[in-house]
Image (cartoon, rainbow, N blue to C red):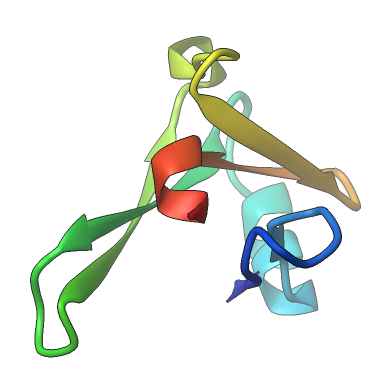
Length: 79
C-alpha cells in the first residue's frame, strides 16, 4: 500500500498489485482497513486489519476501490 498526502490528487492511497491479489483471494466480504495511530519510533504506527464492510462509516471513512479490491482509511488518518 502506498499512501499519498491529502494535498495530492485522489485517491489517498494506491494498492500494489501484490496487495490487490492478496485481498482478492480472501473470503468475501472483507476489505483492508488502514489507520495511523500515535506511537512507534517515528511518532506514528500504521495499523492494517481485515474488516467486514458493514463497519465502514461513510461519514468518517474514505473508500478506495482498485481492480476489485477495497481498502478503507478513516479521514483523520488520511491527513
